[in-house]
Length: 423
Image (cartoon, rainbow, N blue to C red; front, side, top):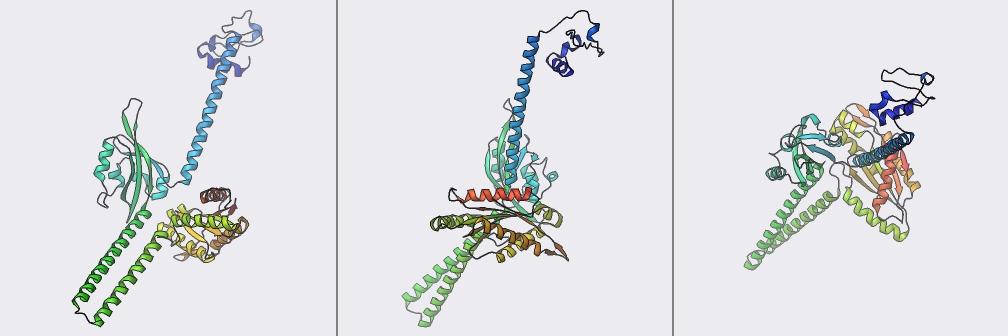
């Protein structure tokens, strides 16, 4: 019997390892650990039959195979979760039974810039929330959690970033142990400051629009009274008409501004994600009808988090604004250039196949190398990774094409960044 079999036997019968007696062609290992050669034994006392040993070995082998299969399944599940979190800007959080944060996934610090040490061990309303800012139903939220109920889409502001208000959207679910005892909450959250800013702008614009409409109604009433009274001269009527036209002109301008706000990213001036998806839906119909090519580019700034960490978010904003200006100048009027989220941009290239799209992508990549960004007497060299794909008639929607472009972008980053990959 070799040493591996002896070890396996010890695993099967750990209490009998010191008393094991074997055949004449093997050896004996007593409790003291000294090897006794087989030639010195005159008789054997076999405490386990060979059939029993084989059965135990088969059981142990099966258990080992089942454990290995379970380990592979858990490894694959973990990999899928990591892939999901890498594509998402949301983060995962956990609380204890006192509603104090005990855990945040790494996306929290990346998305907010808030150090975990400032919020771990504190409640949402003590550690993150700014209760004095915004019209937020904190009492209702606290009552929901005290009742151990799930909550969805709770939006609240935070002052944890010096000089800046951040808005978060959070959803959570209570957690109970096997005995039904409440042990805390877990959930996901995201940073929605840009959306809240757009909402504020829309509310302000709507207020102005309502004010102008009210003024128009007042002007109209005054004009009617003047006509009915027949007291106004022709000159007064002309002035009233001019004023009415001016108000209508202001309303038209305001309506145009409102439209621009609704389709534009407020930081960079590029189109926003919603406008891009609406526009490419129309492009697909045109491409199918006329059999024209349509390609998509996904662009991501390399090491953008490091730029924010080292130089600050104002410099990060300047980087995004500068590359937007450079790329808009390099693109055609019919191309749709949009900020897709964070440091990620997307471009739709009508009448462009994958070969031409790869050439255009390489030109955009080189344009960033040719124009370093000036920062207080120094030049910041910024690189980008780009993934390209062409819309296929077999694809159900533009989302399938975007997914392939995103996969190509991931490959570009995995292969060293500052490169173009086309799929």
